[in-house]
Length: 176
Figure 1 (tube, helix red, strand yellow):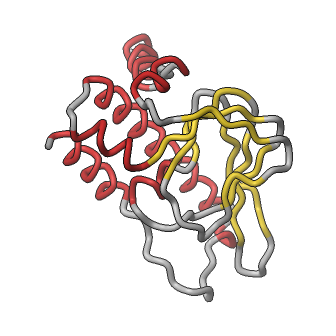
Figure 2 (cartoon, rainbow, N blue to C red):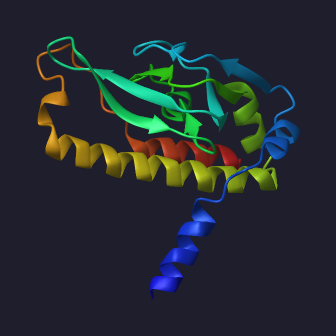
């Protein structure tokens, strides 16, 4: 049973290489952010996401009193900014390079075109993104359980991101 669970986790978290990403997304480009540089700000429009190749990125969220708290770190092999890109919502948090970061910038239009073309690579990408989203949701729920003050109650109401709707949208585009 434990071996089966470990094997399943390995399949679901298998990384997609730089070469594959650049081959499947011809318009994608490699970008570098120096330590301390902002990737994006909470509330900004999202029309792309990143695959982190090298370095670490910190996800920061403003809370009720205006303070900014760290939510998570994104490391090589993980996506950054995919939730807002897929949902069409504004960025739910800010992201800043902790170290020098090399990443691949993926445009939303090219991402959707890959799904619509039913490219076999798209199914691997959707599986990886689904796993990333599920892991981040679990991590965030644990954080909220331990630090309920991070929920900005009296601040402007923002509709929650429906992860199931986002995944359904991705799968619908892929099945077209």
